[in-house]
Length: 396
Ligand SMILES: *Cc1c(COP(=O)(O)O)cnc(C)c1O
Image 1 (cartoon, rainbow, N blue to C red):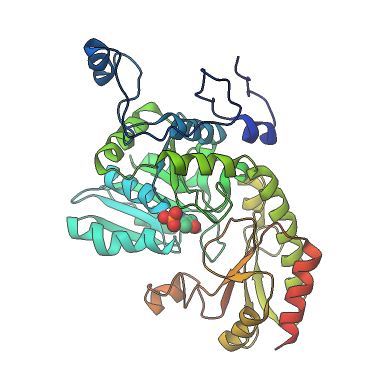
Image 2 (image 1 turned 120 degrees about the vertical axis):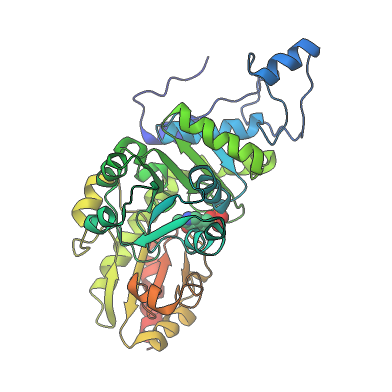
């Protein structure tokens, strides 16, 4: 007897999505099927499993019950046909590129996309003849202008990292489809709780589960969800061959972390809104970017396409890099580290860390200034986070 989640609220869905594959012992926790291979009842059964006539597990690179529970859960939360878990977020990104790009094929991407998602195109896929344009996808005219007859993929990240610029998902789906291309959205910053790109017309959505979905800063992984069976089959077949799949123990950890996703996201957002408002009113702050602020240039779009504003804030301290460093070196609660989406607050400096491999002119063009500080807000008490930031700013 499985619970029908149709029409249920997000907390119920996060708690119960994905069926427990154990029908032997009745375990409430999902078991870890720590096996590389599966035996067949007899030769005919093996043949039927391989031909696809009968559903069955063959080999863990192709499928595993623990991983499958996680995949089904995320597919449910993203309102998609099916999920494919990958060994890292970049394995998800690269497998999507591998599926849809090729020699003489063009892609259009968000300029301020996750650093490696751009680098792997510019330095690696370009070696195989892939053509690309990275543009400011927040500006739909730029997206339209960049589309060519051989464009097969429109790849966006919204909110983008670390500029917190948004891209209109529904409008991009329309542009992509008019040109016979697919729209892929990196939804890592929002998690399936706050944004569902497939419902807005996207064809494929992906997450680095290293961030919000796992949420405990102890696992690296990724997941892809497609809207249709056809796209699922295409990507799945590439991943089966390339081999960047998630292992059963990793899947179990992620599933465990994911059950508190909606709680963590809710608390993080409450904290972020308070911190952003505090920073905005602080005389030593040049500017703050957070979608929940009315001053965010795309606050209306955020309210329309997102179910909340998330917990990522970017800001610049007056006086540039030196004063920014004073804040980074004096905050006591957020740890100085890259990554985001864990229960704990993290702070970092993109120009010298996550985005250091992007040439300065491209970085500036994408809005990643040298003084920009990125704050990934965790689930601590907001009063403690505010007091901590206050004492660090007082050190300037
Ligand atoms: C971290 C991240 C990735 C890459 O994921 P890994 O799990 O580190 O491989 C991709 N996109 C975004 C937005 C990310 O934050």
